Image (cartoon, rainbow over all chains, first blue to last red; front, side):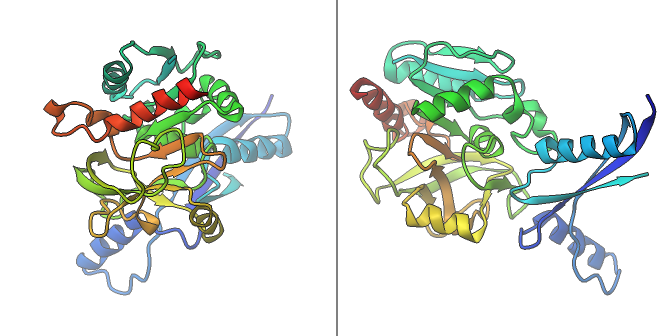
Length: 82
Length: 224
């Protein structure tokens, strides 16, 4: 079976506070990077999936993201092929 | 009472929980391993605090998908009282047995301190031994206790009196929305809370205000 490199990106939903992003923004500003207007921290999962075809791999990745990788109460996710 | 404490790798308050239950009920509770699929006969189920699976991915996320959780969800659906403290609360939200989510503390640091709590709902199997509006002091110890729920969920929780415990003004240690420290499910038989009532059952622990929660559960089970 062919294998596919799939990347799942998980981000906090809009409106959910991100204290870590805020702290990173503060750190960047204190490093004299000017013009940083908002940082949101997320997660990236690089996976190798065996599947019949790309469509199946995408379907599987979406299911994994929905079931475990993201907490859909507060997070959104996105699936891409590398 | 047949109490059962669910054990997860990385939990570290399970023994405190067992000791508290034993102290109050006089009997050693049973334990069940997270990979088991069946619960022993249980009329009270407890998910203890700690750092199941090292808090990898999200606090409680991996534990919430453990095989035993199907049995816990089924018992909750039947009306068995289920209590989750700290990591147990995180786990209950991840398992969707309670709404909302517990995010990283607003101050980003791990907090280990005493807070003041107001008992907001006493019409449930866990808190009927307290007076509504009673204020007690209790320890918390967590990194992800910042309760969040969307506006609609929050409105439902507040409207239905499902906020069971609230940090009193000025003592919110984590930035949780509406100072929420604990919530109930719709039926009132699942309680998730951050404060460690299991560490407040004997004088040597600096107070016994947590003891009444376990007495309440014992009473509720005996009356059922």
